[in-house]
Image (cartoon, rainbow, N blue to C red; front, side, top):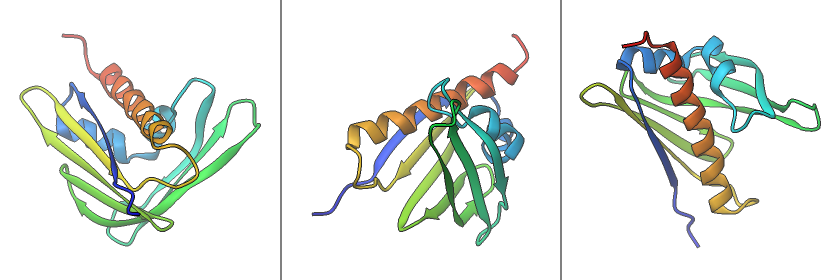
Length: 141
């Protein structure tokens, strides 16, 4: 049985250059890469080029668990597309500029240990955290 990829998305009210920068810079990643307040990312590295590696250390704030989300970039199109492999899985992040915002879509191969709904909700929560982080950086209108 083939498991279909999962897609989560959000619309960020910010210019594409700021959205891209927040998605690809370790200092920003450590601020938004969390599904909930009881998790955090204390370390992140990014070598943003095809063949370059990335890693984000995700940990429960109470130190009860943690893991490294790491992989290798397979395709980079600045301000448009990031593709990467992590383990035997693949993900694609698309940045689509709209009128005053950017739609960010993340499509990923699910793992087989957790329910699809749980994986979708977790990745969506992280993307929602990303949206809040980027929009909080914007000057007030």
